[in-house]
Length: 323
Figure 1 (tube, rainbow, N blue to C red):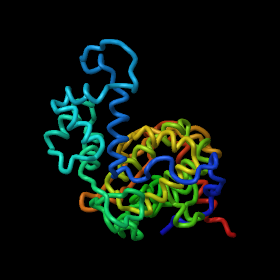
Figure 2 (cartoon, one colour; figure 1 turned 30 degrees about the vertical axis):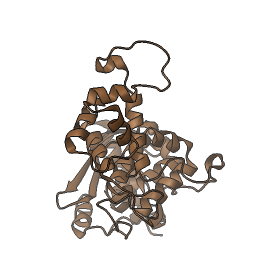
Figure 3 (cartoon, rainbow, N blue to C red; figure 1 turned 90 degrees about the vertical axis):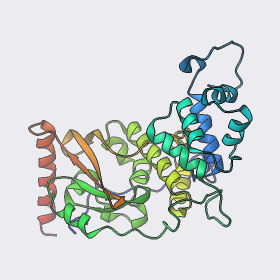
Figure 4 (tube, one colour; figure 1 turned 180 degrees about the vertical axis):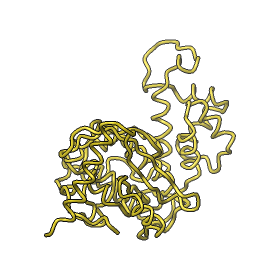
């Protein structure tokens, strides 16, 4: 594969932020505590007037809706909703979960996340604290990139592209991605992770025009992954490391955002060619959604297309020069 090139340095190591010893929150969101945290954060963002409920005033002990107000909206008893939020309902029906999702104004991704969390139960001897039984047991084994994905990468020399696996691990990349994003081949395999690089590599804060938005997207996707893979010890280790080393990660993780990685715009400030506006797309195979091809393209005829072409050409010339 044509990817292993030398470029900008990889993520740097640093001491634990604030002397924290361990993740600030439960690393696996597919846990009973994860369900409680998710429901509480979603209740806290709603006010009575948002859901056409009267507000009789008085001081509220918690932000957002009270449990009894949410139960009223969902059409369940206060006791039942309280037990659901505490993870004490053995097998909540789809109808009840759908009603709670509607009451909380959840979008489809959040509603699916709620269903997964509510179905999760802890297993004995799990490596992650409170980790539950989920569909991805055994997913700690190293993931191998599909040969067809490698062929796609090599067939797109002018399009920066990477193959993203579980936990946002980077499984493969092409030389154009090296030019844009840096050389993943210079990193140890365990460090080739999009979220880890975003939070722990100082260069990422200048590469992305809106680093905060990029970082928050990563947190939201990791929450989605944790709901899907509650028994994945490598995912728990990643979330634990980021929680220890990044105060920003800890803060955003506690908000429990949930969002899939699909497509959108990113503005880059590259040290060689300056500002580029690129579109990223995440393409998943129907028979193996755990591997996604992430591509970056520029609008035809735009200054960003010229800058990207120049950057890729410079990388090709650098690699071709004798060492």
